[in-house]
Length: 434
Image 1 (tube, rainbow, N blue to C red):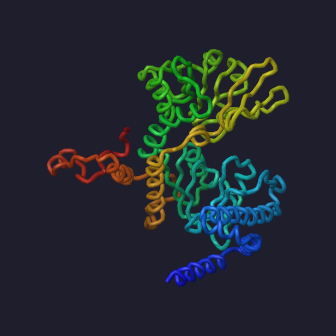
Image 2: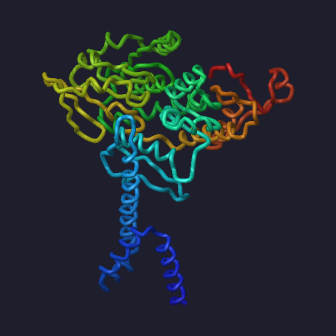
Image 3: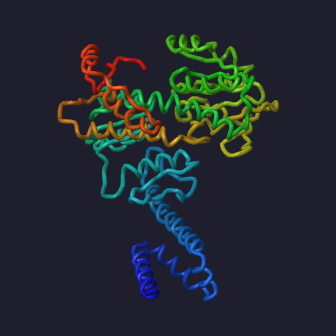
């Protein structure tokens, strides 16, 4: 029986080898010929050693294949000439379901656009839906593949900047299909922006700087949902928080929550931290950075790396010093140091983690939006930008209530009639502000 079991294992192993790529198979055979009887006995006694060998071979094989793809991409000219990637694509991979993944930590600007292009131009496959975060994928398809963009059946976008770009396309009459604004859905606004950022801002700052918050003076630029979460978390730990705003309603909310609303130029010389949460660009400019005190921490919780004017810091008179991963000291000629986190990219994505519960809420919202656009009958949606239907928002929330053992109260027929709503929802009109 033992021999039969061993024979079955050997047969299964041969099948696995047969499915490997030629490069990987060659490496495994080479490794096999280098084994001595003694090393073979040791390997059989330790499955971990064999597993490590196969894992390393898989990584090397993946690097070879993706480097070949990268070289092929570089042969295709663009407006700026050939793209030259600054590093190998060793961390791109394929998951267990056979879906190719093109992303890794520390990718350059060229790497970023190469990854997007690979997702769009997969062999024997073309997208008919777009799920985007920031509008970059939509922008790339619109600019580089206009014929493909016209065949897109729907777009789902979950960021402030991406939604703004969609509204621009719609206003110009260039939107070829319906788009769903998930960013302004309640489940996205409250849970991804407010509650998640309330925790991740502290996590990111602690991991990178080990700073104590008590008594620190902090300017938070923007008092939207992200800004509200950041301000609440910092205030709870004893920080003195100031807010900058362009919107009078958000500014009034900040005042009523106990925060002083100021202009950045008024406070920039004395604060210990500046945190951007606006979704805009050049919120913190060189004129602000020049006036910051030594040791001031600057980071971004808003959009991409546009909120801090990094271009103005890449000059000959300023010196950059990497003190730890995601932490740079920008040194002025007089010795002053400004501490820049994640090179101006999103702090919560670069320096901390996003809770799986929040990811579940956001992913569910996006999935429902995609299903709605794909299955919608002709004529329901036009070439415009739409908010997620309230019923779907409520459904996403209801799916996650069991995690807290929460029990909803049910309306009676008489109560539902009194309110003029269905007892099964939606419970609030679209204009309701939570």
